[in-house]
Amino acid sequence: MKRAVFNAASAVLLVLAFVPGLALAKDKKIVLGFSQVGAESEWRTANTQSIKDAAATEGITLKFSDAQQRQENQIKAIRSFIAQRVDVIAFSPVVETGWEPVLREAKAARIPVILSDRAVDVKDDSLWVSFMGSDFVEEGRRAAKWLIDYPPVKELAAKGDVNIVELQGTVGSAPAIDRKQGFEEVLKNAPKFKIIRSQTGDFTRAKGKEVMEAFLKAEGKKINVLYAHNDDMAIGAIQAIEEAGLRPGKDVVIVSIDAVKGAFEAMIAGKLNCTVECSPLLGPQLMSAVKDVVAGKPVPKRIVTEEGVFPQEVAAKEFPHRKY
Ligand code: GYE
Picture 1 (tube, rainbow, N blue to C red):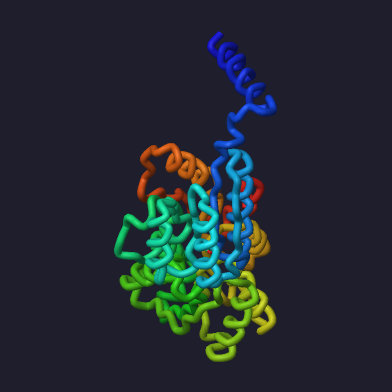
Picture 2 (cartoon, rainbow, N blue to C red; picture 1 turned 60 degrees about the vertical axis):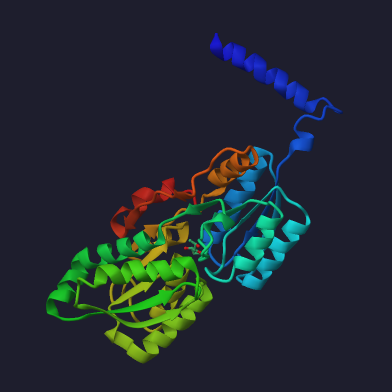
């Protein structure tokens, strides 16, 4: 009975929404300006898709801008959203610092700003309304915890040092800073584990491969472990390891972050040992926060994404359930 009443009510609403000339919905469409980091990884592609899909589902007009991993492009995009007087601005800041001036301009224009995926480092918290995304420090800790408990690595540690090379994400970005910090924090209590080289691979496959080649040239067989701040860099590095005549996943144990499909394929092939989950599917919660902000409802200052860890042993079983 209740459902029938509800259905009747929504049918009336539907009809109303489609009657031409009725101001309903049309004039009220929320306009969201979104400045994306770029298209540097599988993660980012899935994130962009999630945001576009969710905006379409929620009937939110999305002005989407790709910054190609450059802060100045993001600042330009945000200024243009302000000039266009969008209802809400959301962005995924490529780096943490340097945002005060443009965020103050948005505030002066009374346009609320939501941070998606990555945080900013600004003193004045009133410059943004909400930050939704993962706990990157925790992801780094999870990678390290998995590593020191991984039996082949434990065996190595029993005999001597475990030499780690690290592929960092984009210099100055929240995930690169935090994933390094979380990983090192856990390793502090595991003195046999040594990071012998650490360099940025800018979160891309091409750079991951290039930097891994340099690591291999310098350290060769000394390298026991690769810790990559994202799966794409690990996948690029796997190629470099194979080209150097070594076996990724065996001669070099590899742990990375994101848990994208490409990582599952690499695990199933035995070339990647573990991936720590970081979900890019932020679209639906972003749109719901956008709607709440416009409606004047309170939104949480911090919304943390829930995620897990996937070692190689579970990859084949999990693969069919992966959405990105
Ligand atoms: O891990 C990486 C991407 O900010 C969490 O950015 C995101 C990171 C993600 O390029 O693959």
